[in-house]
Amino acid sequence: MRINWIFGVILLVISSGCTTEVAHDHVHVDVDDRYGTEAFREAEIKTSLGGHGIPGHAWKIENPVENTRTALERGAESYATHCARCHGKDGTGGGLINNLVMDPMPADLTDFHVQAYADGEIFWVISEGSPGTDMPVYKGTLGESEMWSLVHYIKDLD
Image (cartoon, rainbow, N blue to C red; front, side, top):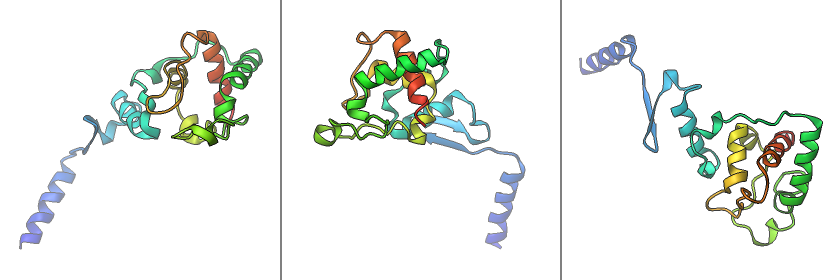
């Protein structure tokens, strides 16, 4: 008798169209409406690869530099000068410095988690660094268009 009552309550909840909420780091997301919502993106950022301290709005920032051969060449030049020593020539994290002193190791920029970041998120990490890692702040060292070209190059590593 008690099992029938519990089954009836479950059936009632399911048939009433109730949605389930997922809570993570104080971000509540309606599972039925989570894809494409800002709250879901914020929760996803906080959980993927440590989040790198990326603010929730960064994924909305569009790259103002057109993805051209010139932009990729400029990005490749910046990468060779500023990034390859840690992330490796091919972006897989096998740079000269990382095996000696870095904890945590530099990110594999070809990894699908990194490639899934929006341009604005990658720009933010380049510009502001990554808390808890040795990733430096390049704002002030690199110009904005140079960092955006670097974003194009990183996205082209996959």
